[in-house]
Amino acid sequence: MAVTIYDIAKKANVSYATASRVLNGNNYGRRSDSLKRAKEILRIAAIEGYQPNTSAQALVGKNTQNICLLISDQIQSGWSNAYFSQVLSGVEKVCYDSNYGLVLNRYHDDDFEAFFARRKLGGRGFDGIVIAGFVTTQMSEKLRQYKIPFISINKHFDNPDNIPAYYSSGSEVDIALYAYKKGHRRIGFVTENIYPDIQYITEKVRAQNINDCNIVPLPVQGHSDFQSGPEIMKLFLELPEDKRPTLIAGNYQTCAAIIKEMKKHGMKCPDDLSIISRCDCEVCQMSDPKITVITPDNEQIGSIATRKIIEHLEHKDDLVYETCDICNIIIERESVNFLNK
Image (tube, rainbow, N blue to C red; front, top):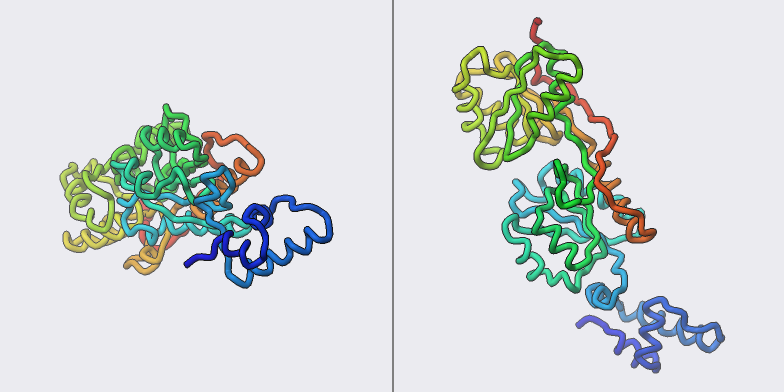
C-alpha cells in the first residue's frame, strides 16, 4: 500500500498537521528544533518512498505540477500516429524542461461527458490541458465548468466558442504553390469533414495572382486513413480526364493508400499522378516511390502550446486564439513529377 502522511507522522513522532505542512513545502518555522524536525520528516519520507497524491492536492486547490495531453480515441493508430507522436515529443520536452509531469488521456468524440465521469476530473491529476484536436462546444463548456485551463492546437475557423489555441494554418497553401511551380494546374486535396478548407486554399492561391490553378476537393465519407485508397481513386476516376488533378495531397496514410491503389489501375507515381504528404513519417520514407512532404513543424507547435499553458498557470498570462508563424518544412523525395507548362 502507498505510504501516507499519517504513516510519516507516526514514524517521525509528530502530528499529522506538522508532517503535512513539511511535505507540502509550507513554512514550518525557523527555529533550530523546527528545522531539525522537518529534516527528519523529509528523511523518513524519502526512505519510505512517499509520493504526494496529486488528485487529492487538486481537490484542495493545490497544483499537481502535471500537464495533460488529450486526443480523441478515434484517431487512426492512436499515439503512434505520426502527427500526434510529433506533437507529443514537443509537449514532453517542455514539460521535462519546466519540471512538469505529463499525463496522456483520450476521449470519445461523441461523449466527452463520459470522459469526465471515468477520469473523475473534478479531482484531476493535472493543472492544465493541451488538446491535440478540435474542441467542440460540449467540450469547452465542460472544461470551463470544471475551471480547467486548456489550449488547443487546432484551427477553429470562426471560433464561436472563443477557444484558446495556438495553431498552424496547415501546409496546404504551400503545397499548392509548390505544385504550381512544378507545373501542376489541377491540385487535389483529400478532405474529411471540413478539413482542409478548400475555399481558404483557393483564396490564398488567388492572392498570389495565380488564376489558372484549380483546387480540386476529393471528399472521403469515412476516415482518411490507410483504408481510404479505393474511395479516393474512385473519386479521381469519376472526374472527366480534363478535370482530374495531376497531383493529390493528403495525410501520410492516404498518400500511401493512393500509391498502392494506383498500381491496381496500372498507374505509376509520379509518372501518372504526383503525391504530397502533409506529415512526415517512416511510411513516407519507405514508400515506393518515397513521398515528398510539406508539413508544419508539429513538434515545435506542441512545444509552444505547452509553454503557453504553463505560463498561464504560473504567471496568469492570457490564453488566446492565435496562429503560429512557423514556416512549413519541405522534404523533397520522389513522388512529385515536373510537368511542362
